[in-house]
Length: 128
Image 1 (cartoon, rainbow, N blue to C red):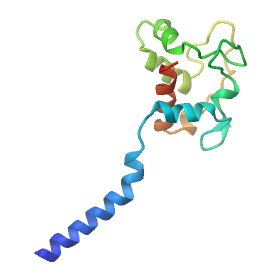
Image 2 (image 1 turned 90 degrees about the horizontal axis):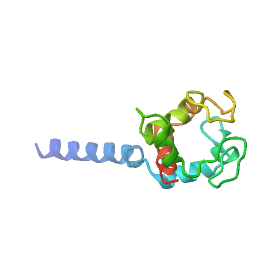
Image 3 (image 1 turned 90 degrees about the vertical axis):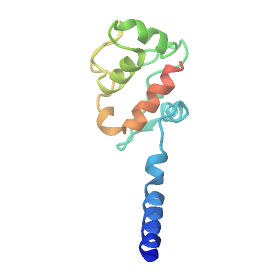
Image 4 (image 1 turned 45 degrees about the vertical axis):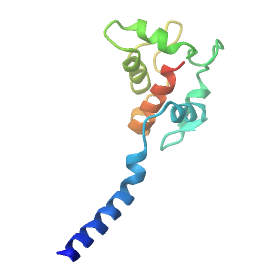
């Protein structure tokens, strides 16, 4: 019986150690900021957010994301700011900001980024 308990304890320790990296990864605004600032993101090294969006009043290829959390909350009455930002990353043509054209934003982030990465970007943008 003692051998059985010892063996189970060792197996549990190994399982916990092997899964620790996956389980310890959590959505965070700081990780989202790091992703936002990268020139290339995702498994295919696609164009990063900072290449087309600013966090200031500067107008670049895409709209400024300054105050995006406040603006996002007002765009769709049935969507939270979080939902709107998530949708804007994963379905960029669902809503087009006035003055911009459909199809301009890269549309494969949902396939190329993990849910952790997408949700971390959302958390970061909710602080803007």
